[in-house]
Image 1 (tube, rainbow, N blue to C red):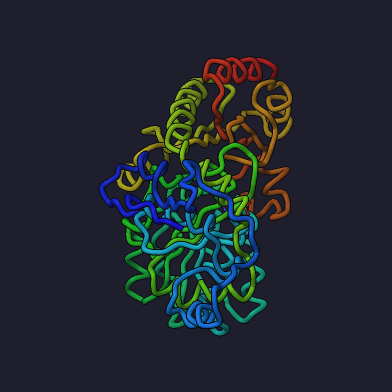
Image 2 (image 1 turned 90 degrees about the vertical axis):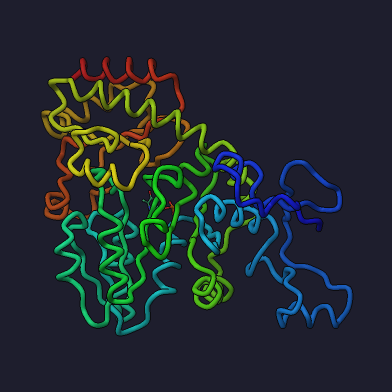
Length: 399
Ligand SMILES: *Cc1c(COP(=O)(O)O)cnc(C)c1O
């Protein structure tokens, strides 16, 4: 394999990094990234095999450990995020699980923000305690609650911001200061903000995770995830976990996701612009009792947004006046925007969290998280914004 000599250019701006970063080429010199659909690798001699296994020769050994196409994906997103090391995973949940499992052992304690993607909440609330890791869930926007939850054995802190589905924004730098003071590892799920609008490592976080399934693929084709952090922790803790338990990314998914990274800035910028227009329209509607969009000055944590995000991103949350019945009438009247629990897609997707993604947490937990029966979560896609606005306007009329 011949290395692309320009791969290491540190001066590229994000859009250029996302087209060229991490590219390696076979002796054929292909323009596009090759898919290395191989399980293993052959060695020219017994000595060469020995050198691979003892690390003297850094080449590939087995695709559960590492794979050339997956490595290109890892190197590209690493360059964008400004991280020293990255591991691709089979899904976003594999990445979250990996980041937490590689941070704790029995007897440790984890603090997480309550407003979490459902499966992340399951890991913190149910799975970790089964293995002797206690967890405390706090209101992430209340910094005092993070401080109060600290115990001598707190080893990891976990949050997503903006949160799902109510788009609250948590002060990452403030939580990072608490975790740094006690030597815990702060893990940020950065899916909703995307790597373009928020850089948690620069805000003091230790680890960033993505569900690459969302904006990074962005066209609803495959699942993937990635964990980004410093070299030492990835090598010493994350790598052995991946090697021996197998949550690795498939080379085919890595190839799809490399294509996704090339167009990420274009797609996310367009989706964000449309999301802003839809949010502004909804804000003026009498049938909308609450509107939450991080790109607007009336966002509940607008001051934090200004400090840590450079764009409002692609998600809009709003409450239809009239509860579940009115929200259902609105959703059922939509024709362009499709009903789906996914997000970050080219297609605009809407979901009613109380009866879908957040049905199983129960009414009490929903109340605590402000997920009323009228709340809808809209992921804005790549359609012409005028078609989206017309769709929303017509559906409001149907209530
Ligand atoms: C989708 C999502 C996940 C899980 O990702 P998968 O790729 O579906 O496993 C985790 N966190 C957030 C915020 C998500 O939106």
